[in-house]
Image (cartoon, rainbow, N blue to C red; front, side, top):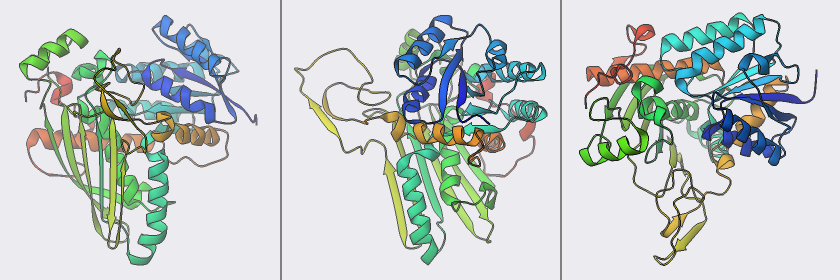
Length: 409
């Protein structure tokens, strides 16, 4: 077995470039390839990989060509949601044609609905390729350290935790397809609750044990369009992203409450909220875990570094202080090495080691499927306006009204 993993990326956008930045701290792997339908972006991604010295990456003409190259051992799948099925089908076709892979890692969410998720999982299982589900927040250093310490000290002496909270909030996505319910598969619930729903379950699960030991039994979901369907913001969104929220809105706020049954007979709670209508310095990730005699909290904007710019300091808008940055003046928090703070470095290092046979995967596509089931159950609950037993009926064929373009706030 080779000691170095050759990695190819499907997708060359914002998220893929976060992985590239993180790769500077990943050993035993090189980024050697990229395919994107946008040839200019693919060439730029490959050039950045070479500049960062994380691998002699080159752009391929097709997914098939990249997967068939003996230099490529594993795929990082980071393309848009609406291309997921097509991308996986091409990867699997290449493998059936004789290509060899040691693993495939897929960004969140695994798919836009349960039917799509089951389809691509079945395809990958048919060719026997190990999988990894790329959920970076589980690997955030603060989350890893806090969870391990609370379980080792607090839970070990006073009992397991009973309440977890998680949130991800910012002012809205970078690219037009995120704002399209039909393309993305929903709104902020589908886009970001995949992080937070898994986070609360992860925090409530004892380190080293399976997520199955904390089983969801009831779920309550709520969605709303708080900001972007107001006339002034409909106009702004149409100009910036070419989507019309007066006709086909998506939710910009979502909340879920999940009741879990633990393997030792207790009931515990996970609460999560996500928002594209957050007004603040930029992206804010947060989590809490509470137990009988202990608690932890994490807020990514409590970074320990702040800058101040008076109104005399002017310049172009950017994201050099924090992702989704909303201002350039005043007291500004700075998140150094965001890719590490948000968990990308630890995540990529982990899955490299998984595909080299050195570790067991923390999360796989099976876990990604379970996340999609939770998201779709939350949409069902929101549409019906009531708490549902999990899993609810009709989950496998359910498509949210937001994704159909029929939802009205």
